[in-house]
Length: 93
Image (tube, rainbow, N blue to C red):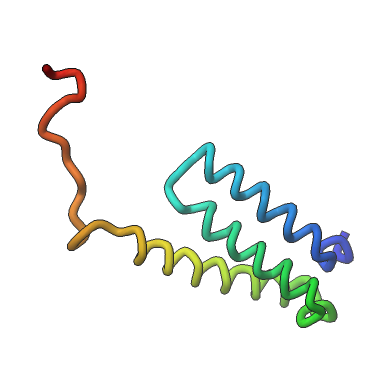
């Protein structure tokens, strides 16, 4: 089972699965994990991480996911961290 996570396509498949979950449950939580899995898959495919063990790969994945989540949070936040409110309804004439 450990050797399975050392294959690049497993990480890419996990990234696609997490991206699909993000579409179904939006909030940019799973998108950070999807980006982390995709970059980890690319590192394994380029043999930069091909000789790494599973704990090291999981550490790389978690670090990349955290960085991706922080970048997404910074880039998609509203002006001055304000919550968007609506004063009118779309059905009001």
